[in-house]
Length: 209
Length: 209
DNA sequence: AGACTTATGTGAACACTGTAAACAAGTGTG
DNA sequence: CACACTTGTTTACAGTGTTCACATAAGTCT
Image (cartoon, rainbow over all chains, first blue to last red):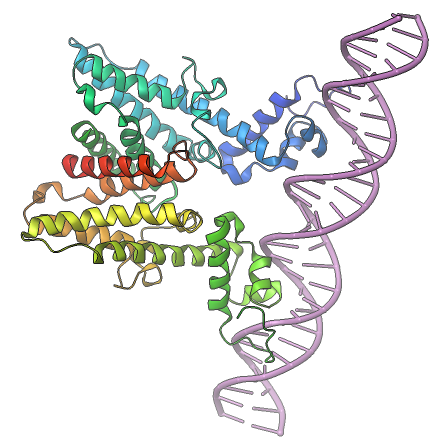
């Protein structure tokens, strides 16, 4: 689909094609692998054509980053969808928060290139609320986490006065573990050690929030 | 000191000069700013001269990364040196652990370029024990953290059975917060919000370990 | 319908980058 | 002193992001 040389002079949907090709590259080799010329090559177009849709290589990479965040959101959603039914609302809320962490870590492990791309460069708090980085539910990773924490408060598990700033704590912990496992000093851990670390970390967050 | 064109054909200590110039670049612009040609330029030498001391650009960057880790270690050491005296050993041990986190976060905030460089690419667990990435005390950041946790156990604050793997938890949390504040979604927080987040995070780690 | 404007592509060119191969200048060792 | 070895230089090449001029398709207005 990338290589059939189009008959029309216009591409039709080049911007999307560029982001898609960039995402493929990011998946294979991380953010440094998304190189403008190769992206345009895969889209079957001249390098400069990209400049009609993106100001910069930076802007292109940013768009790819948002797409990666959206995939991360879908990974979280998948984990949340697999939660077994519980009796009390508190357990459900707890499971939903755990699912956020688990989906986050699973995505980082499973798609390290995309994961690193999702958090490259200048992703602002605005990006954490933009539709472009949202998953199937329409929520971004950050919003999914917020919702899970809100649920914890509503079900009475988390005292309301401990709610403000809780995103930062939970997010920091999980994000840090993911980063250290991907290209940090914890990279050489096997999957069993990782599962152990993940379990203890999520436990710590629940206990320490 | 970098620009006086040497009279001798040999440089004398080129390897160190390259790492030093690379560190300067990393400090100003992060890992992507350490470009081989510019490094050699600053050392007053031809680009290819670098290949007599480093296999790759990657190898050069790795050396710079180790130097950055050493600076991080010194930042932690500085924070630990400023701990006021306490009566009981438990409070001291707790303060030492807090100092690790505080020094970590202060370094990330104060030297974001170097911080990102310290954790770029392929830093293995072996690097966390190599002398090249150690601070004044001869300990690497990872070892400083381990020592602080050991102190927590020795003074009876942390039960021994909770000790294994505790590095990962503490490190992940603090590292994650640092990353999110540097070029993540928490970048737009002001210093007051950061201090608040740091305080709550360290509190969570202590409580949840 | 035909002319004008605008959006979207191509082509050639430039200043960079990392890296390889051959050569040159010092340094050390028998 | 001759010879090998280390360390720096020269030249060269492929690949990158980006700019400027040009070409072509698609709308738009009368």
